[in-house]
Length: 123
Length: 110
Image (tube, rainbow over all chains, first blue to last red; front, side):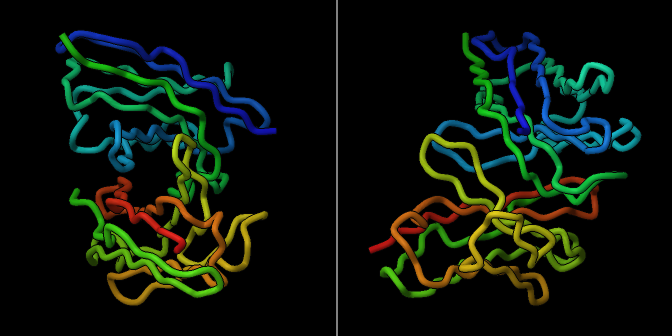
């Protein structure tokens, strides 16, 4: 059974940093691209960042480029999101998601989602 | 990275068919066959319903189908059931090697 378990969320002041983690199990982690998707309270979905299986292809939404860094450790079946210079508008539930297609950069469709970790940016 | 355009809400009666549109540009929906659709019930994580424009993941009912014409993709749900009431989001790969979502559509089953 595929499982994605996020951790690291919490309340943080504007301008500070936070690191999210995602522990994956139930599939061959290094066969798939992985992504972070967020959802602000009562709002829609927003893709944040994605990494190909070998970290060779990495992308970011314009809203987080230069502030967030995605990384993965295939030996530990883990995905990370380092979030710096946090803003109030970064407040959201952050989902770790698995690409539906194995290999290269995947198909940019997401077949498994974690339950999310809530990040609240407020003074 | 402008969001794809979806109607805010659609509704239908049990047994009917409804279609949700998702309009983008030639740099996203119109340029690639990487359009996906997700269903989200309140308080739950999204569920993949359609990927690569027309494909259904294993376990998803064949009442759900996808299509695309030009810069507009569509999700059709036939034989509407009460359990289909949810929010629906489309997404597309973009020429900037990113992913863009639609604003979401609330489906009400009357």
